[in-house]
Length: 203
Image (cartoon, rainbow, N blue to C red; front, side):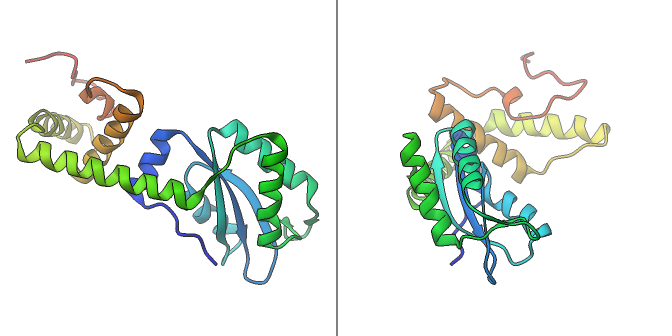
């Protein structure tokens, strides 16, 4: 059964949080694959270029990339492979159990995918409500002004960014603000640098 993958806002929260998934993927006709990723949807789309029909069946989240790599490498080293298709001979369930066993042996804590997804959804809902309240109170005037200034200069330089993308960048920075206890967000953290525009200069 295919795993429910994080959507855009949830992916942004997970990226800001810094956690990494050890995932198990499988083909309908057998064979599995174990890897690690910060962005499961992006990884799935990449994998499907090589293995059409592949789907992710499970994901276990760890605190960083180094832990994920340790687990993935050990699982792939200890299970037999189908050399022709470059997949594991173990089915998805067996691969999932092996991931859990390897993590336990290494003393690495795993967080269930459903738990991470629920936390991400809660965080996204909170941030969206916070943005809506700030918009209604006129507290996003600085953001809208910064976006207009950036867009005008970017257009002159043949670049661009939609308002939706700018809002997504704002959301990402609000996630980081919550996770790192930053006091405020600077436009320089949201908008890519452009020659001719300097958000550090007021007025």
